Amino acid sequence: MFENFSLFKRTNELEGKIDQFFDKLAEASVIYRLAVRGYLREGASEEFKERLETVGDLETQADGLRRDIEQSLSKNILIPDSRGDVLGLIATADDVLTLFPSSLWAFYIAKPVIHDQFTNGYNRLTNMVLKAVDELALHCSGLLSPSDAATAD
Image (cartoon, rainbow, N blue to C red; front, top):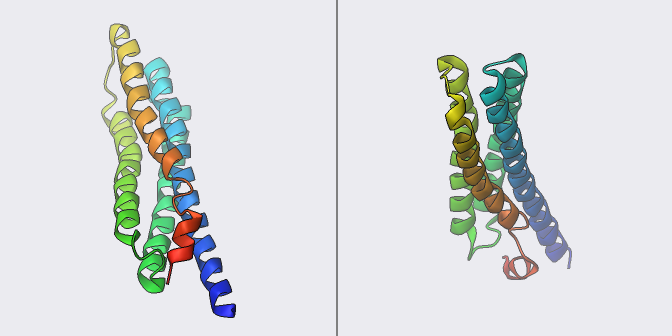
């Protein structure tokens, strides 16, 4: 009886970490969008730099969560049928998240001039990419379902 309780507690903790990870991805996406819009309006302003730093902090926090998730999945052998899928999804999402601060740093360092005639197109392109990221974060939040917990070792 206590063994099952411990199993469900660990599963709930893992699910919480996965949700937190994808929350960080979604939050970084919002800040990234604001940073790009700000850059297109004002260039590499102080506000842009603050958003760059915020995105970097979120990416660092998500990296810590990713390591915790990987450790929990490998150590506790929870959700055995889906473990590889979850690890792959987390790794791919982490790769995307890593691109946010690196691309903002590229803006900050290179300071490209984007002419007004291209601003709307650039905003649309950014929005389309981030919509895909937001969908990923939305659909992957709550990744573990109650049936996963029931089939865990």
